[in-house]
Amino acid sequence: MRRRLLLAIDSGSQSTKVSVIDEQGRVHASAQRPLRPYDTSVPGHAVHPDDDIWDSVRTTCNEALERLRGSGTDANRVAAVGLCTIRFCRALLDADGRLVEPVLSWMDERVSRPHDPSDRRVAHVTTSSGYVTHRLTGRFVDTRATYQGMWPIDQHTGEWSTDPASYDATGMPRLLLSDLVSPGDLLGTVTPEAAAASGIPVGLPVVATANDKAVEALGCGLHGEDTVLLSLGTYIAAMTTGSAPVAPDGRYWVNVGATPGSYLHESRGIRRGMWTVSWFRDLVSGVAESPSAGGNESLQDTLNAEAALVPPGCGGLLTLLDWLPPPEAPHRRGALIGFDGTQGRAHIYRSILEGIALTMLGHVSAMEQAVGRRFERVLVAGGGSRSDLMMQIVADVFDRPACRTAMPDAAALGAAVCAAVGIGLHPDWDTAVTRMVAPGRSFAPDPSDVTAYRRVLGSHSRLAGLADRLFADR
Image (cartoon, rainbow, N blue to C red; front, side):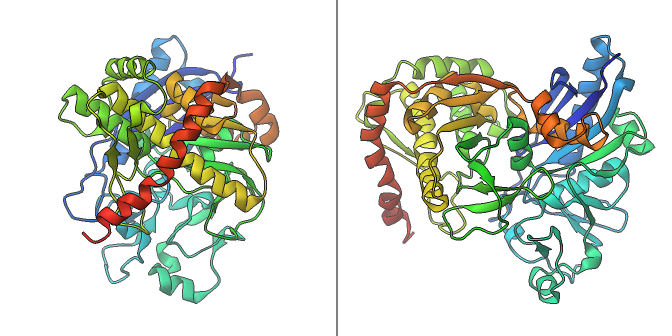
């Protein structure tokens, strides 16, 4: 019997990735397209220009399905679509579902502010997930597991709030909001118009997932209280399993999980994490493009090889990863400090990687203290997990085994898991994860490098305070 296939859409901050995956988690075809650079011409604004998110989704779907057909596989074997998109975006639509203005990125300061209900052009306020769902299905429906932040949502029930004050506080009357479904539920079916644009067969069911970090956690097989997932993407964060919808303090926050009724504890993070790695790579290459344009993979391989020869600590060079400051400290700036004339590009590159690991160790340690347990191993996902050097630095800085996922794009695999459960390819979530998700290579900490990073950690942990004194009064 021929296996049925699932089309997994992972619409991220820097690119859209589409994979065709079977019920055992094997990839049959894939494609990736970069997003255009954010439009940041207005201070505090960061938008996806024009209709870039949908354009990227439809062109990447076409390319992945064309590659599937090129391999000799009938595209009609695709049985469902799993849709995963960037969290914390805001899309303002007219009555027909067209964009009133370009989609607001999660980096746009307006997504943390109430919507202005006086704008009569706006008939629907939704997420990037809700917008792409409408483009695929023609319906104003969205997954409840992507609504966090400035939305009138009851985090305990996953339903729109019953408190009228929450609608006033967010500027979002109920009539502007989409109907909600749970992960694994049907969002709708692909319309003829969407099929013509994307190449996806008309009538295919589109299955709800969750926010991108939660879907990534699902695709990594994150489970158990002794494991933390380090997600190395544009936004870097760490997550572990949780049971309550509200965090007790500010050392972590609660993220809705990708299975119904589940939650994740999520640490504080780095807002332009692997973006900074791409920024430096493209700076070295002399390419006059945004880091979101991707490319330069051979140069990145070279930088990884060169940086692997640099001792831990980079000869005293330290990196502070505030290329995009956190909302509570908008004065912060990124910093490279400790030059003495002996360092070159490999030292800078490695220092950025070390800065990521050292910063996240601090955030994870704070979350460990808050939840009252130590994580014995680190799962690592996202684009940064493809680097053996990054994986080894994580293992050494955290002083515990670091294991990458077998499939680099765990969010796409998580989307496929949701689709598989949604159409009954697997009877339940546990079975789907067991059959589709496999671990990848594990990296053990090197005792001598662990000792070296313990010495570096003290200096690095004081760096943010030093930078605050420099930049706070600017």
